[in-house]
Length: 509
Image (cartoon, rainbow, N blue to C red):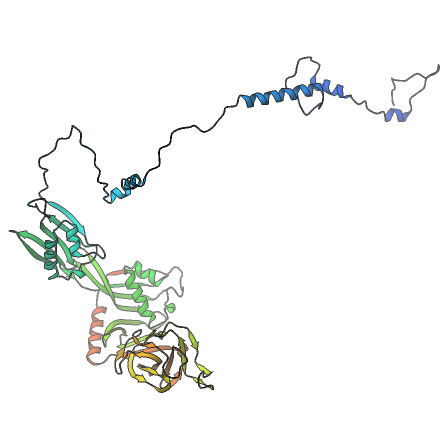
């Protein structure tokens, strides 16, 4: 099973056979270091310029390769180009005068008419003129800006100061100058002037003074005349209807109602109902002031009527009507109702709430019938809501006090004032100043003691949501209903059916 071709002879005359262990575990022959180098280099005797410096470290071949690499690195460094800064002259920094001149000559100041006073010198190609020609007339358009003045606009257009004041007086006799709207464009024509030391005379001026009036000024035979040109205007109110759909505001705007009219419409509804209860299938009805000029322009005015036809509740028909000099929303039956919280009388924080407390001066516990607001001395005190002043004067421990009676059996009281403004028997509006914060009566410091009574019983002012009602009667009710019938008989000027994005969706507003 094994063949042995290498059998050593013994020391004597006989032969000795290798044992099985010697055959199976014969160690391999390890090549020497020189054999490795010769194997890597091959048998050729040619000189190898590229020496592997990772093999045979310390040998002659390695040393020769290392020396070659070092020489190549030194040669590359020696012949590398030197890069450095290039010396060149730099301009001297500008002085203050030169800097200001450069700033004046930049693009932005020149656009606003900057002038340094310098000009280019004339060359031989320029021939001086004995007299420069002047345009016989100048036509321009001047626009009245916000906060601008009519007289100032004429002077800026090139009209003399005296003539501008005369023209403004002529126009002011027809239309108040303050009523001319900003953005009004005026066509101005300036004539020839007798000499260059005076301003050009005004030959013609034309502009739209009001929505329904245009003014035209012309110089005829040396005299300025004013002509009024009426513009026919249709004042028929505009009626807009549509379905609430996915949103009351968005649907009304899509139907053609202006943004301010829609906001007023929503506020009117919010005074009568919870606006969140509006359903997607409800229909809105809006009537607002609207004017159309024969020249094609149109403008919308204030909201006149707010209607809501509901599918799951009471429908609303509201119209604005003036009562006691104040505009208010009334229902079709002639009943007016406004709802909301009482206005805060002063901006200060509440220092003492409604209920039992220990009196800071008397020293014992008793009922505190109102609320104390912390405020500085002299802070204005405002009426919580509309009403009639029932009492204004000194009230013992309350000091200087004002009491206001309101519809529905409500009465508000304001005490410890430093000065009283309201007069007994007069009508005050919500937010009107009735006095100033003080420390009169039994008071430890400047503050407002505010009380609220309902039918003579004190209640907590912080928990009241009041409802005020007023009823039209007699001629006022007849005029109100006639006006309402006229608005409801108007044709619909813009109708757009807006469907809900999801059937039966609630709270679309």
